Length: 227
Image: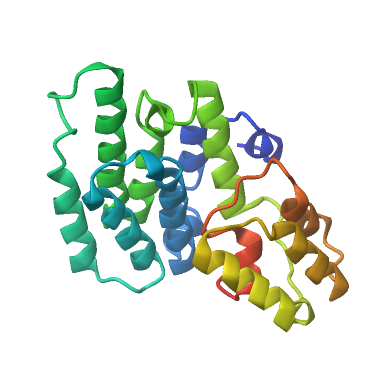
């Protein structure tokens, strides 16, 4: 996959995730964290439609596991619980049942102990993002946006100056990471620019009104020294 293909708004999510196999995304702790958080971001996109708290808890456990705050045993337990959700399997009927079944199956995939498997599972269903984010084209666009938010541009690594990591920038980034409300991204761009940041990639990512942001956003991670 070329840089142009990776950055396309409507690229093929499965191909994009597949290109990460065997790279630093699977070989390093940071890469595996990003793969997991990409999956969490996908599942968070239909959080409000989930009716069973076991599914909510499974997503939360996967997020905690990505940040080293939950054990493998806890992740496996959340997977077992998600598997018990009635909407999964052949008993699902009709469009609503298909969406619920796909969502539950995606969350079971998210709680795989293998980070690449958890990420790839987000791209394996006929109903993209469980059918809750519009038609396939729109849902794939959203999935690509989450990939871009978490992985940035793998073809062009960013050098982040520690001088840009001011108290204001860190406070803004921490607040967004903890709350999962990324409405202050443009304000973060201003804070970084005031600190001397001259990276068009960073500032544009923060100010892009169309960009989806999730926990694991590459700019927020750089500010919080998670990347």
